[in-house]
Length: 299
Length: 330
Image (cartoon, rainbow over all chains, first blue to last red; front, side, top):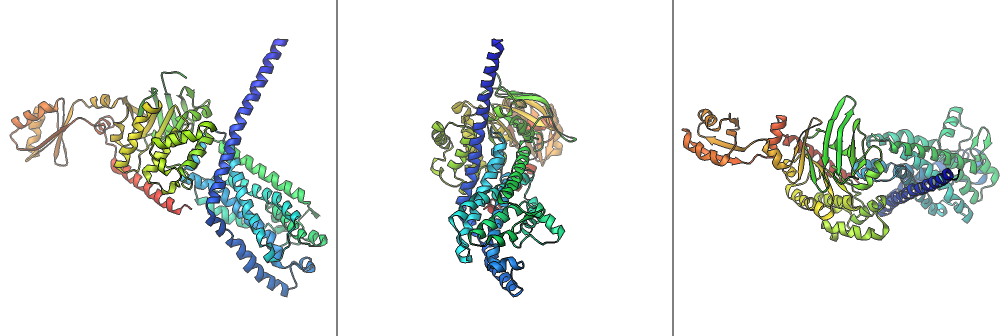
């Protein structure tokens, strides 16, 4: 009896050794793929600055324009905002942070298609690493860029008249990251199946823009017609926008009664922020799993 | 791993739907050899190389690289091979050093030797002074050299090159070949490469000529040329029509009229020329004879020349594509 036990113990040890042996190269590969994305992002500071133009346009031009129009019509979304003395620009400020994360995450992860077109992807795909590292590294790389692109907008808070507290900023970091990760993973999953740049415009028009408009970045999602309510609740970005708004505006001193009226409801209950983050995280993990599977396919 | 073969391919078949790209290839490449895969575009060269590099799976048949079966353990094969692709695969926004560091990381070059290896391979291709320049600023030839350096960084057993000099000017091509020719001696690596340039195949120790997914012949360049059997003589005369039967009588083979020139294959060119001048009644205006080239071999084996102008236009498109994409890239 002792001999088989010894064999089993040895096999188990070998198995452990092998598992450790396969995991470490994957972690190393994830790191370097992530690092390359961050390095390119950092090097391309012109893009970093240029990508701030769109959020600024939304906040200053769109925000100011609609603020004026809405104040004439009795304030934002009925009583909730007006009662709290919230301008439309302030209302959309968290939404614009979310928008910046949404667009950056998808664009960044879509760089896989660029890599495919310019050949670099081949260097990665023939490397002796597990293909899951490509999906995970790209997803984290995109998430990192998107997170920076979103958080950098916080410097505009004083201009918009939104007060930030240390607590709200600390809470924002993980929330922005979860949103960035979920959307970046979705981008990687899509890009993993895309062979050319042609499909990119389709993704922008039929996925990114609808996701943005339905996410509640620009208007509250309560009291909408049923068809639209359903669509907004199916939009994963929705579960990222709402926590951002509640944390930013809550930190700015918006009373909790007003916050709850703005808060996202699902089946008539206001979702806790943790639940929203969990939904996003789950979505991100599913997308990442799809991306990993797609990358592992060999012709 | 067996010491006898670096690459061994047995009855390899690859179909894309109804298209038979590779139809049962057998070949063996010895360690330290420069092995050339010669054939026109679409002959099955890239498909074969992709299967050997584990980027594609064969429909049937088997192949081992460095003694490892490509289908059973692709990851192990990948760690033992270096690759230089037909199209560039560098990150143009990174420097040479950064590209090589990325490679060292994914190929598990130990941290202790990473720096030294990077310096070594850059020196080998004479890019040391450009180590920290962004690749976008490199010329086409420099990029190729950097890719060769990268392919050698993790000291592979076999270096695969798919059309390594495509789209480069002749001078740069010779320069690249200067490096490649030295590699087996310097680094003990086996080189497996594809090309459709006949002159490049001459650098190889052995060549396989492939057409329509099948190997037509394997051998050293000299062995292959002997298949043509003799010298190729080109003659121009004041009256080709009258000269043709006379030349046929002397050579014992029917000359082919090609663009005002009569071409004929003879066993011994040096002996044939004096006889030609002496025995023809028509005035001979010029005579040239040469050893048969691989072009002649290819012509003999497949009944047609590798169409250079076809290859030329593909190269041109590729170059235009690169120029455009290079500009479009931010």
